[in-house]
Amino acid sequence: MKKRLSFVLLLSTLILLLGGCIRIKYDATIHTDQSVTLKTTYAAKEHPVARLLNMQPDWEKLSKQAEKNGYETELFSTKDDFEGMKMVKTFDRLEDMASIKDEWKTGIGGILIPPDTTYDVKKTDGFWFDKYRLDTTIDLSIDRLNIQGYQPTGQVKKLADRYIRQADIEINLHAPKAVILQNGEQIDWANYSDVSWKLYGTKANQLQLIAYVPNPTGWIITIIVLLLALGIFLYWLFHRVRRLRREQVKTVGVTLLICFVFGTITLMIAPDSSSAPPPTEQVVSAKGEITPTFLVHGLFGTERTFLPMIEHMRKSKVADDGGRCDVDLEGGVKCQAAPSTTGNPLVRIVFEDDEASIDEQEKWIAESIAAYDKAQRANFTDINLVGHSMGGLGIVNYTLRESIPYHVRKIVTLDSPIAGSDYADLGLVLAPYGTNTNSPAIRDLASKSEVIQTLTERLETWPRDVMVYSFGAKGGDFDLIRLDSSFALENYTDNIETKSYKYDHFTIHRREPVFKEIKRFLFDDSNS
View 1 (cartoon, rainbow, N blue to C red):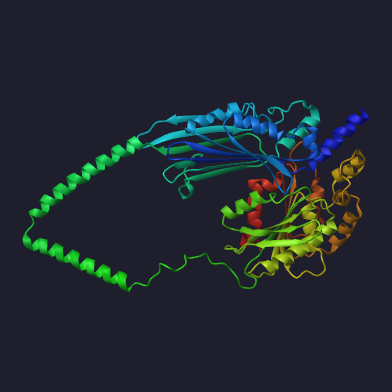
View 2: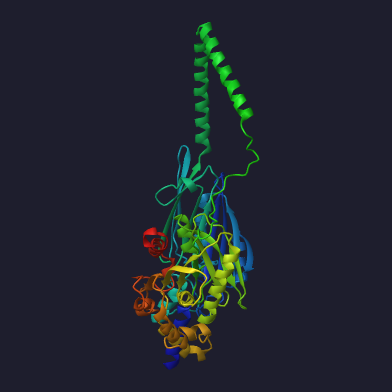
């Protein structure tokens, strides 16, 4: 009984520390002949939880199954320890794609996609456009997946289900300009030939796509009718002109000649702009005209942690992707800086060693900001900081430094254990079971660690002019970070907002309502 309880606690801790370890991407291109080329990518990351759940796919076997179904396949691996398979297949007709749900039952979909996933394509014939309507539901849950040899129950089942739901799913559809794609209820005419969905922390997602594909027969008939109408009009006009008086004909002719001469002279004297470069967006460059926001991930975070947030801010046109700074295992920093058109670049700081101590990460944050300052052509004096989970501790420690060459205006903490985490205490207890829960990060995150005690003392000197917004997560089957730990900065400053959501720790930084609050706090001038 004791061993069983220890196993449950061990599995719980592993899943709590896990980021998204499954990636699925569908990239479909619709052609004018109504055929479709589908490029599919499945990838999974090596992780102890995946082994416990028997979730390590046999890519060689799955590749052979996909080839039997008519796909071209390619196995691959990435630098961030993902392994997977790329598949390509062209379907003669759009409605033929409905066969995918049958292929899923024997292929990779039997592991990563529920076999009973609905996928229906209905065609409605039209005169000018044939209408194709695709309805599908993507719902990842442990009950609906075909994981051989593993049937969890109780709390372990809930935690395993949480692991499955960490999958990142991306769906992209492209079409020629002649094809109109409608995502949901209305057509986005600015991007009518490209639509995409990005699903994170996936539960039940009902997706709908409508494609309007030109019907050649209808357009040929329309062109013939228009040509006949034009011919009739020209015939009428010709006979009408013949009846005009000679003086009227002369007047019309002279007018047309004057217009022709004037237009020719205008073109000759106009400046030659054919070799001029296309207009570019204004990029701010004066001292202090940009305010970078540095985004710091937490334990087991990756370069993808803040991509949904960046995409939301970019589409809202309040900020742009300003690049990223990568910190290698030796602490070396390399930054790629992109020009900012909004004045608010969002910059990711990515740690290769995401289990390093808080002191190390604080130092790396300082070095990354300095390296970004050198790489960025536009200068800055003010900065904002955003941290998820342990990343929040890093930015708080950085803000408490005695001498910073920048002015920290605002910080956002996303379910960050400012006062430590009880689950980190549990991790120290489970270290003898062979997992790396005794890493420097876990030791520092424990509520009674020396680092947390020192931070508590340093918080007495918290700079009062720094505006703070702390978010807490209260969703799921357990509370990873207590709210009094997430909101601990309330004890040291009045210049703070706090808000809790019924999201879990692993998805709070990927939620639209949270994005909107962060957008208001960081970029609304009334909050300055």
